[in-house]
Length: 178
Image (tube, rainbow, N blue to C red; front, side):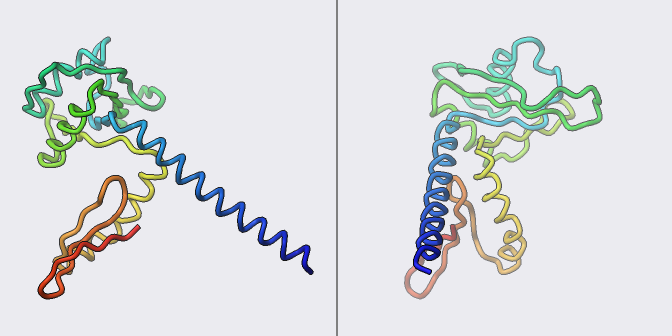
């Protein structure tokens, strides 16, 4: 029986190690994407042949920000396979900015402003997170209607921790849920 208990303990330890390594991998992926922005809703082929030049001219107009020095990109591309059906949602654009402060300015403006418009198209700008982080953020979507119904203020700490202020007289505390 001792051998079986040893194997169970070994597997439990390996599961914990695997969870730890997965969380570290997610953290590394999110850190490597900290200078990225994701643009949703820009019609296919709107960018022409040079997506970086297109974004360099469009982003300052959309966000009404004055970038000094001007926006520069390490890379920018559309995500996913091309599709010939124009009725499908356009593929997202991922842009990695050269300067972290430019990415933060754009994301802060996008957070305050919500949707932007190019012609007749609604454009959304978001942070670029790993698959695991996006799944964790989506898990909180089910809580939003209930928290709104209760009249509670809430939000997500970057990248995916729910917070809400709780007041117990005379002190206000922030609660977090992982």
